[in-house]
Image (cartoon, rainbow, N blue to C red; front, side, top):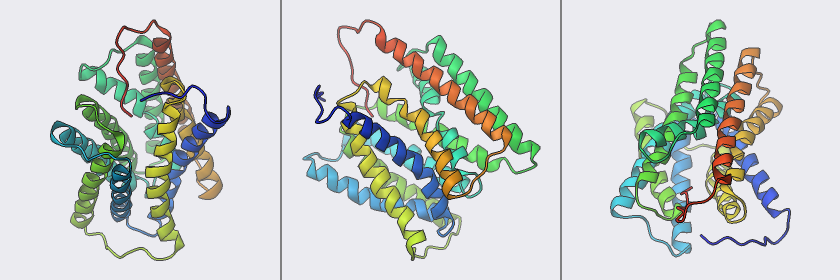
Length: 309
């Protein structure tokens, strides 16, 4: 992918960064709003159905083809874990867990991805990354302890942490496969995720009425269009204009945006334990990203391999 060192406007990369962080930070709120009117697994199914159609169309318009062979297997494994199982746990968990807290748990993805990549022999772990993972793990423990102290079921929190962990593993599955165009890989992933979520929805006996009314329809449209197409396009453009290590700070901003939106729009309130644990998770995430920045500052090897998004 060729970088353009001179963007149309000096502020354009910052606008793209803000757009990605705002959209991805808002998706947790829209999932929560949609869950108020549409059964969670059925909502995920409808979102992925629309996203599949859009991504396949964009793949064709970009002159690309859907992956085949080993690339297809990697994309399908990615979709099964990320859009399939992970979405099932995410949508179900957000029935009771505040959207901001769900975003904080999802903020652990860069750290857990690093651990999975090390286990798969793809990357090395640095001391700062390990420290960040331990601090984030402590934060998750504080969040869970606060839930147990309040004598509220911790099962939704377990579901959300499982969703984030599955999403982390999905990235490693995709990385182990051959390099492929992101549009085609995401199109296949969305289609596989659609099958998984639809199957889970029917197994659990959810009603399958088509949503009616703005409060039911708009979240699905927003999540498919903004989450799967617009933010994805902004991110791809940003990769061509900024260092990936700088872009990775989106993972820190997203939970902050989600907490602010959840409080302002959905009137969500976090307990003192949830706030303390969230701050620890974000601190651990910052440590992990600083580790990446130190690695990026080191002399580059003779041959560099681009990281697949």
